[in-house]
Amino acid sequence: MQRSWFLLVTILLAMLATLFPVGIGVFMAQLEANRRESEQLSIFADAAVGRAEAVMTQALNALLDLESLRDEPCSPSQLVEMRRITYTYRHIQDAGIYRGGKRLCSALLGPIQADQLALPPPDWRTRDNLDFWFDQPNPFAAPRRTLLIGRNGNYVAVDPQNFVDVVDRESRRLAVVNTDAGRIFAVSQGASLPRLQRAYADHAYGSGGETLRDDDASIVLRRSRTMPLAVLVLAPRAALLANWKALLAGGLLVGLAAGVPLGILVWRRATRRFSLEGELRGAVRRHEMAVHYQPIVSLADNRCVGVEALVRWRRQGRLVRPNLFIPMAENAGLIQQITDQVLDIVLTELGTLLRRHPSFYVSINVGVEDLKSRRFLGVLASRLRGTGIAPGQIRIEATERGFLEPDVARDTIQAFRDAGHPVYIDDFGTGYSSLSYLQSFKVDALKIDKSFVDTIGQEAASSTVAPHIIAMAQSLGLQIVAEGIEDSTQADFLREQGVDYGQGWLFGRPVPAVELAQLLARATPQAA
Ligand code: C2E
Ligand code: MG
Ligand code: MG
Image 1: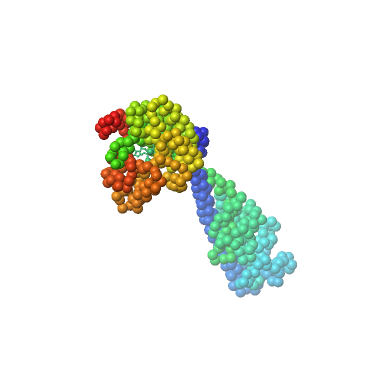
Image 2 (image 1 turned 120 degrees about the vertical axis):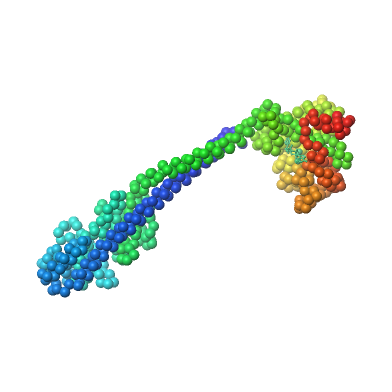
């Protein structure tokens, strides 16, 4: 990945890692604000329903008292009784008698002149013959309205404000609904009736427990369990927002506390990789690579016929194994420079040995990028010119990863072979690539991967793979090198199977050039 892209992606990731918990914090604050508001609305609605039920109960009891009077209707003694009733029940303003659409007398008004106070047909009649006039004029104060409840010619009057007279510092709006008639008959001061009617219509079919929120308010409807009554509470949105803002600071703080360390962690992780890549870049520029050599032996007589060159990174006084940095080098576009440097080191360190022993060879591992062009072949040719080293002494190890574009790889591999460099397929069988390339292009040898050699002599299913690979290579006329041989059982088995060459700790570990020279001198005195 290019540096600038990498930085951009890292910054984005770190920002995401920071913002995600902050977002969750804000979201939680909102949830909590909603939860608290619902809770408060619910408590308030319960209190309001209790109040409305109490007022209604008084009205009904007053009516019962009125019905139980035995005196002559509108007689002076009955008027006294009616005054006693209005005085007894705090919420009752008046109690009276009506007949055929006319009020006859009441506690407050005394005897009423004929036709002076007509009573229209009731707005609602219940199954037990209670009549409701939800909105009658008050005979004393024109703008104030009265709720009348009557039965069998007796009525009581209640000021609807009594139903909604609940003290509230939060200025929530209230409405009391007769749920049978579907009619709002009391609203708190300052409330808009059409707004409350709309809210009731939205709620009417719900169970009534939950809080509904729309653009400007949170609304809850609470039904009475004992009467066809319900209370609608409407809290302005501003209250919720204020509540939310108070919680937001806490949510933000928690979100930041989690998000910032997470963001830093992501940033560090990414840039550490990035800086390791930068370090590798510097190491390649300063030629800090070293090469170790591991013997490859002929299994027939354990004679060392060649070596594999294995790169090491000299980093802060320690040698880093290639598994840790070759993939990074491939990604960072450094692999070709590394291949070139390995070749230069090999020629410097083993030049004399190779010239003296024309049958001795060095295997060099090439990267994916090296198989995409003939560039490295050009480098090889120019470095070898005039050295007296034969092309066959420098062999090429390519892994199946390099065969993703088989046509390109085929050309490059053929060019190496045409120039006299034998080509080996490394880590054979582990590349997950289709083996079809074996039919379409020619190579000289297969290196059986250590993982298959490891299972020789074991019960594992994969222990049967090695013989198949060997048989296949033999039928294709390819040489075989077995990698990672660590004990003589493995060596014996491979030898019996007809494998020609082997490599592994049994014969020798990768060592620096100086040690290699000593090792070869001990093994075959004439080779040193
Ligand atoms: P490889 O080419 O398959 O090399 C064989 C690896 O197996 C080497 O690991 C070697 O030290 C290890 N090995 C050999 N015999 C035994 C054994 O008996 N037991 C065990 N446990 N290990 C054994 P190393 O040197 O760490 O190299 C790892 C890989 O890095 C190589 O696998 C090769 O793919 C890559 N590599 C090494 N040098 C270069 C290079 O110069 N260029 C490129 N492109 N890749 C390289
Ligand atoms: Mg190799
Ligand atoms: Mg290998």
